[in-house]
Image 1 (cartoon, rainbow, N blue to C red):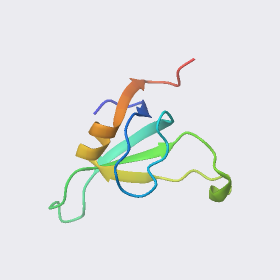
Image 2 (cartoon, rainbow, N blue to C red):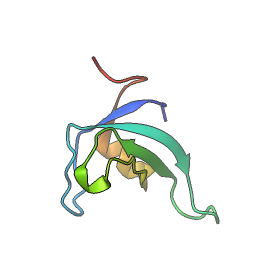
Image 3 (cartoon, rainbow, N blue to C red):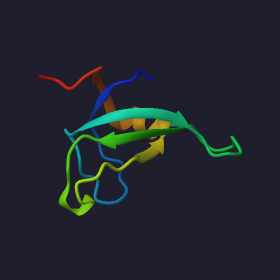
Image 4 (tube, rainbow, N blue to C red):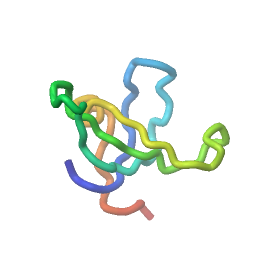
Length: 79
């Protein structure tokens, strides 16, 4: 996976599925401590939501879902 900023281009089909068109920062790849689950992508939404009380929140998705739902933008924020 390329480090940098991604744009959400599709919804997961689970939950309310918002955020299409929004930007996200890829943080890292991880997996469960037994190494038996799928690779997970940790990422941070690059926006502030009132219900988050101004804090960053780390999110995660299975890598296959992330690769289907997000497209790479670049190393930095688009101008």
